[in-house]
Length: 146
Image (cartoon, rainbow, N blue to C red; front, side, top):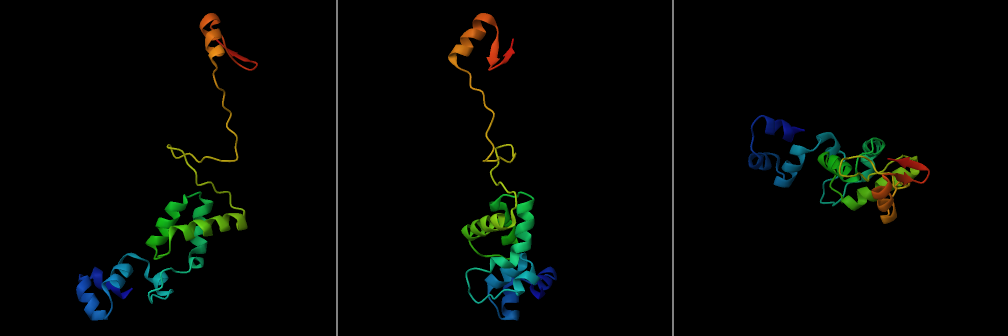
């Protein structure tokens, strides 16, 4: 929190590095992340932060049907520095455990695609085209169009 305060007062990152006796990477990390969440985790060179600390946020994002890559981006903004694969596995576990209805598959328009729903598709055969060109009638089973 002091780092963000000093940066807002106009101190440079290199000056803060010397003033606080820390590294430039630490200054950069605390400048953009939520300082309260960052302070809860050890920063002693560990690669990942315990993803359980972001559990409530992730559940909220899953319930709003946010894509997993977007969830990863959001929690990374808040200080998470783990890998995307870990987030994917954790999200899958939460969806199964809490029975969350989540489908991260979307089409190009942004509409959610339910992979369990069978699409009601009618294919046009060459016979249908021939009948339409001769009689002007097009049929889908019992339904006729003219």
